[in-house]
View (cartoon, helix red, strand yellow):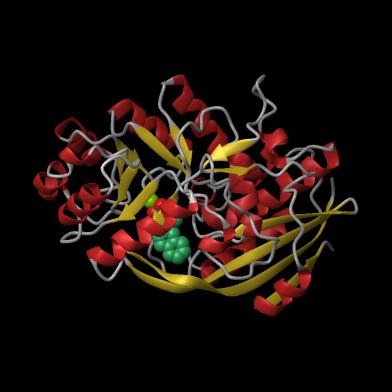
Length: 375
Ligand code: NPQ
Ligand code: MG
């Protein structure tokens, strides 16, 4: 494949409800949609960087800069056979995994189309069992204005058929939240995500979550920390999951060696792409650790690729992948829906991502676009 041209679209969509985490509220979801053209085909990718450097240091603007000034020039005109060649080609740029992953996603889409495979089939080539056809999913609930509203919101999602609830917590909004939710819903699969809002000094608070039979506690400590998590883990009963601090296979190996966690949340964007995400999945599998696919409030373009990743055999826990209506009233792809009977979503089966982008809608939500052509 010769990479002939690339388009970037800075888009902005309203969320159906504000998404509040320990680092603040989000009402408007901006993202960058990427199109890569090669051999008469076009591949789509999504950069999940946000407006603020909260979850990651990357923002829509830093990602645009890194894409435009470094990654796109390194890709235009290149001859590539497989998407696994992208990460080595981008190694001259340190960090910026969210920017890198967006182009890698588009190249996976291209290569899968070329091979007449779905993204999931292409990713699952190393595994004799192939990809799953549907994947277990759950919903990630932001911090609500009150406990009563949290209970109502959870009840609404359970009614829609979601079989796993994740709640965001922060200091002062944790133990009483878990107690209230457990009192109302004694049996639901429930997990909490702190997005790095605590330190080891908060160990007593984190221990006070022990009685609530959590599926896991996600990223309680520093976003770059692995060592303190390894010290916390034997002191709490809740299985410990790392998100923010696993930004590469190297970090995942360190976490395994230190015994820092029981579970990985794998987000391809956070680790610089689907090849690295799959390698972390393989490492976890070798060590008998379950993994699940995290979410960044993706558009349908990103959601299709999340579903492909979650179809790999080691993704045994429900992912943060929800129906389109949980995020957007109208999206740039046809809506993804929940199979309410078993809290699953179907993995797209068409060639590549297997979703059609609605170009009219893309145009409507685009703030700024730029075209890059091989010289
Ligand atoms: C997590 N996501 O697992 C993240 C983090 C996150 C679905 O829980 C704007 C857009 C703000 C995406 C804040 C979920 C965000 C964001 C947090 C993602 O930690
Ligand atoms: Mg998280």
